[in-house]
Length: 446
Image (cartoon, rainbow, N blue to C red; front, side, top):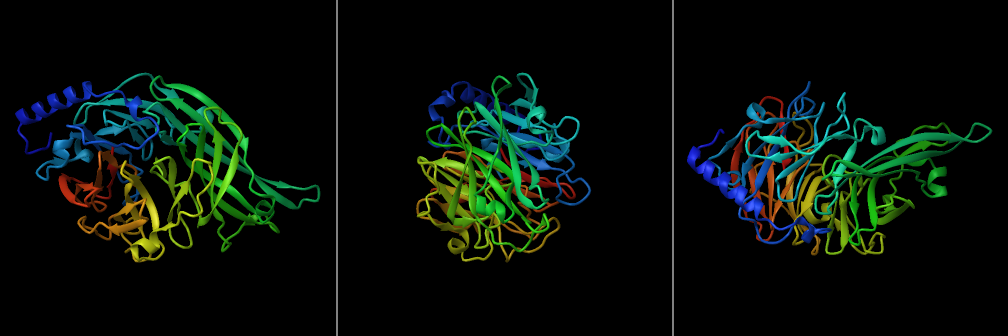
């Protein structure tokens, strides 16, 4: 291990971690809620890096992971070099990783290529030691070889993957009428590597919206409601010109929408709409919606007024009295939430860009903010250093440990550090050094 800790201290830390993990209570006590409670004595922190393919920051060269103890993660004298000695997470491109709530297990579904759609899980053992556990299963027959999936917040029991396919429809005269959106949803037993359920549905917008050429073009980021009887799926809308059936641009952006299904049956699809936020709710690489205090809080993207945090209440409808606009909260323009994660206290760390972001080697510069879901306030975290090449568009993982949130900071192709944000006090601790290689970047902690 590349660390200034002595081998003796390292072995002692490992012994303490194993003891702590073996004595943990069941995750079932926290089903349906965000990670909360006091900081554990120790846990694994897994750092993930995306290697460059052809262009800096594209992440298409594969994903490498490396784990350290929490004590090492918060120590700035420790160096972590996953690109040199990390474990290669199976995936043709950037792996879609998830971790157990206690950090002891990594879940992976390979993205694209010959192994695309293969589910596997690993016991975290420190350093590059990730031991395969359980059996593998392919979800490619249900949702293809490049599935979009997340782990539901049900005590590490279930994963959900989704897809959508589109087909234009025409009347007997050959005139465009609508674009059909057929969605597929599969739920996966993460513990036993079994398919729980699979359903397909044609999901319609309103007749007026469809006649104007709007349709659901992408879906992602399923999340369970508090009652555990509804599954919410984020959606992106696109539009065709009804006169030509060709792609349209410059159109009015509709209110943010979410698909709602009964759970666990995955039946009875419906679509709900927000009057507060406009734009997409499907997110990208990181979980985009979370359960907190009985409601689901969901980020939106590509909102003409800047990204919002939206709220879906226990009645399974948007709360249109809850108006949390990141532009207003931060005093910026065109805020775009790239990834985010709340702790159990309702404070959240948000990765974002905005119109003032510099254009770096891989895209627009990213920043972190600390937000309060209850007060609907946010402030930029100035204690984390920023650089024009600090690229967060592909950011995936945040570790939540009590009220602390662990993030990675490193410009594309440059070294950086882990930073730990105490969401209660706002204090920021600079942790272990992250050793980078040319063109590559870090995509989070797990």
